[in-house]
Image (tube, rainbow, N blue to C red; front, side):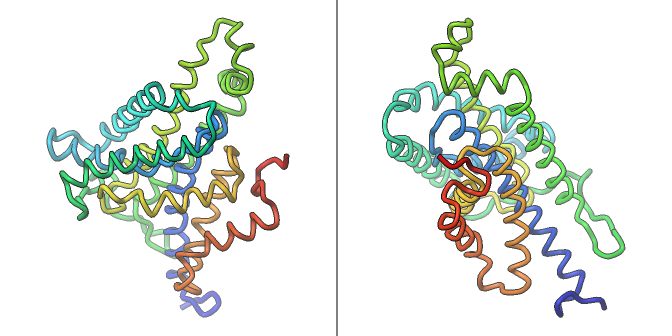
Length: 295
């Protein structure tokens, strides 16, 4: 059997695939954080809880109403996006002019409320949720067997990530969003409702987290606490890519997922810390992040 540095090639490719899948989740989640921080200047610590909410809603839809995966994949981001818009309108809007620590503490409190409420109902054990039949099974590529659902996760995540980048960086709407957050009075002079635009932007950012959660439901065990560990890694991804950098979040998320997967092959003991080691090195050498702009 062909090997790479003494590791069987199929094992190497399997870990690369697993790393790419994890990287797709990192990219989606860090993209939502980058959108919210880059456009609204808010450190959204509730992102992990909203990711979890996006994962648990498909389970609830199937368990209580018999709604299939595809319908909930669309409904879950919409529902969580509306929840996010309500959070922005009722709470976050009041603290925009205050120090970042207020936003951090507020969103941390929101996280504790959401996770605590669901934990009291469902406990902390995993809730089973299966992939749809149309994506079950695997495809034999000759050199490895590729699970169909994991391939779908990577393709759909990349499609959403790069579509979001194009929307914000290359369209008139994205230009209005950036202008509205940098100089709202000028944008309002053109008849645009900036507060409503900000509310929709926050809702869109958390909807990205919910979409990642809905994709993760058949891959990870659905649990009220599933976002806790993941969000710490995602914050590290955002810092490495550059706070507020859309493309930096996408590229860094995918890259770090692959690096994490390879670390599990060559030195498994370091797989849980390699992202944070890279973060420390980047902060020392380039404090603004790999794709961030130096001030």
